[in-house]
Length: 154
Ligand SMILES: CCCCCCCCCCCCCCCC(=O)SCCNC(=O)CCNC(=O)[C@H](O)C(C)(C)COP(=O)(O)OP(=O)(O)OC[C@H]1O[C@@H](n2cnc3c(N)ncnc32)[C@H](O)[C@@H]1OP(=O)(O)O
Image 1 (cartoon, rainbow, N blue to C red):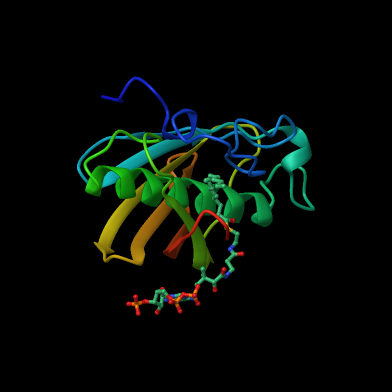
Image 2 (image 1 turned 135 degrees about the vertical axis):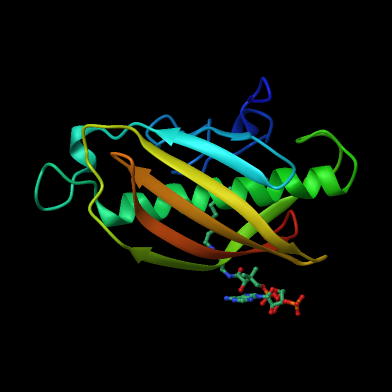
């Protein structure tokens, strides 16, 4: 069961190509909590997101959606840990310190991809997450991500 609002729709001033509602040429992914430490995202590729062969999704797009889904999860978790609703009060912002993607199978361009993110560990400055991307019912990519908390003036 999803919370009513997507995480991205609660984070203000986000122009990110992958997840910013303010970027009208971006991918505009939407992520939702499904549990204490887990989120999901469904992304529907467009034909121009293809790899060399037109039936498969481009690897950079795969990395981008995994990056944005996990970093937005870390940001929302930062607000949760601070005891505040996402996007309220002083800004909490994380950047990608590490994004290690394993491409395990090609992802189909003409079906939505399903992403899950799981928080493995958190400390004051960083959050360690794992992400899985499925297409056509199989795991096509996994990622190990370190989100690092950055100040407003980053
Ligand atoms: C005005 C406000 C507007 C708000 C608007 C809101 C928008 C909000 C939505 C945005 C959603 C974006 C979603 C897409 C996210 C991107 O695409 S961000 C763009 C890509 N990333 C970058 O450009 C990052 C570039 N790198 C950097 O800026 C800095 O190197 C970093 C990553 C912030 C680290 O800074 P630093 O000062 O070197 O940090 P440092 O104190 O050394 O490390 C902090 C901790 O992180 C660990 N760490 C750092 N890097 C790594 C690493 N690569 N591997 C493992 N651990 C690491 C350190 O070991 C350390 O751990 P502890 O010692 O605390 O245990």
